[in-house]
Length: 429
Image (cartoon, rainbow, N blue to C red; front, side, top):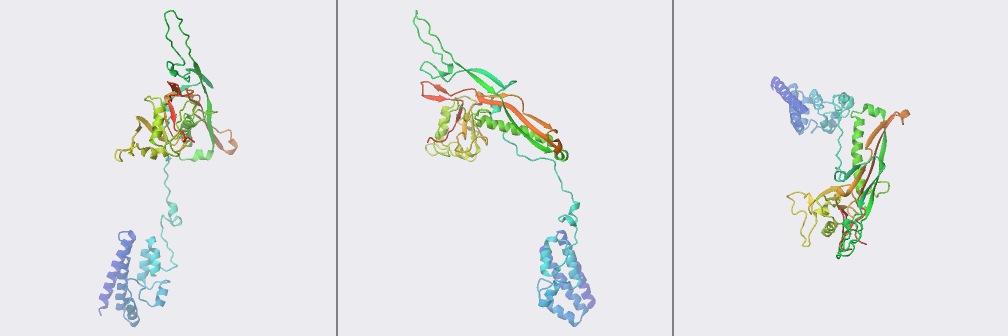
């Protein structure tokens, strides 16, 4: 037996195993190769034991030779239990120290008995605060992420009128009269008659109405800690002013569509001049409903459909009498932007599917907006001075309503009514 050769072979295997452990620790080799490195250490131990000679070493070699794939496999039961509490030699100690640099594999090493159960890692790492993680600052980006709200629907299409006083009156023709064969409601009652040469000309009748716009205040306020204002990485003053303005535009659009006119704007959905055809079936929109609204709408190029987003599925699925899809012929060309020639806007600002006003066809050129003061955003440190708070308030003086007081009846009387505002009602009871 060449003891020197055995020692050299043992040292070479140890060096090779050490290189492999180092690569595993750095992530250059997968952890699955730990078993291969383990076998090298076992083989190196065998050769070292042979070099040392002796009966005890030979018996240990026989026990190790009986195992496969682990330093502890094949050992007598009592030796396996001991291995979990100690290292058998310096090689196992070296392996445990090296592998401890890969924290996610510690449990595996514990099960193999390479690391004892009471082993305590001394590794400095970012993942554990007390082990160095407190030294790594948390990055912060002073940018607020927010999904933008919807664009305004009514105001860009309506007639805005500046108001310097609380109330504004304007005259209009009274076009709510009942027409006759030779008398149209459009001309406020004017009726011409045929006469003979010597007959007196008939007296004409002409009726007017008054439109009233009365400003109402839309407002709100919020207290803010002075410390938050001073220490916030984002300018809180600029943020609040921007958000208040956007939220105010959204709120007024809601009321221009849904308001009841009592202390607030008169919305188009329930306005007296709005025609509301009864829908065919509950919680649905079918082609007959679309045609009824289109028929009642006063035709002009400014019309626009306004529908709740939940109606989209119903509109996509519109079919004709032969069960053919009408709005979308295929899934290749994308969503159509128009319905019967008019643009369609899907929004959250009108009632949900099945409720009156979930879809409508409107000409907002007949809608008046009275603009008073605002929107104005103001701040004050005085109201909550003792509490170290600044109060922000936002307000706007505004009114809105269709200038028509009723729909227009077409000749002959009772034949059909039209309006620039048409919204779908619930089914007839």
